[in-house]
Image (cartoon, rainbow, N blue to C red; front, side):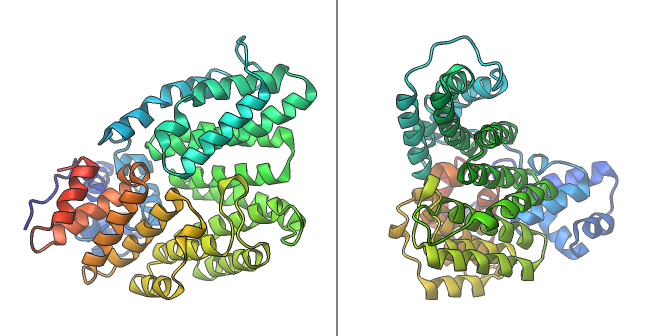
Length: 411
């Protein structure tokens, strides 16, 4: 059997939870009751005998302990490879562009032609979609700044074009910051994205911004705020959504809003609401067909992938996995390393919850997720916790585990 991973290296969430609980002076019984779980379950989580395979569990426990999700996860993590280090190096420029350049008071700098900035924003979004975060963020700070200059001082038509590109660039910035574990910057970038979209007034881009903002709020455990943002989006988009129109942007964003609503409902243990939102999304997807406005890949295939993630959040375990194998979604339809990586990660989460019976399959999917989207997976606290759980339960030395440990930069 291989040596168990050090708690600090595997982002041992259970150990952090126990330390914070004791410092708060809370008993197991009280903390478990506040988190909505049984005492024995919390005890096993703290001892590392159960893993944090659901984001909702992290949020609930952080709220119960009166701390942030980041206090439990220990983010951000040191980069494990050159690509991670290069992605991390893009954040200072993004931070300056977001915090030091308000939309109404951009710096006095020259900007390139707006058409060139639009092209570069689209290229950054395409790189994000393929999990190439270092490339996506490489010049994002400069790009954000120049777009904000034109949005504030350019000709009217250029201002609108710049605002649209700014929504896209800020969406990428939030994704890069979030993937690297810098949730404060991700929230600020998502807020800037929403501000630009609200000024523009385009329903599709406003829907995209609200979707991204809700996801970012959910990441830090602010489920009430996330739910409020996405509910506002649905109220606007459901009226405008026409899945048979020539331009299906509003319908696609309505579908994405239903998908994030399903995930939020699952994390709040509202299985019926989650199923209802998934069904609404599926109905829209059947009528729009496979689309990809704003690199969101809305359509029947993506809805099938989201079903797996929502099912894992609801604790569906092996049943979720078996349904996914029956549905056999074709990932080539999406041509997205990020979505493919997330899908295999969700399959691993579902399998790990079966208490070790299917750990070999879970390991295979975690390995596949890492090969599709290494920067996304290696900095994910739940992925790191799952790796620690698989290591702890392994009865013999397994090459795949050792390889993942090396790639994650732990142990």
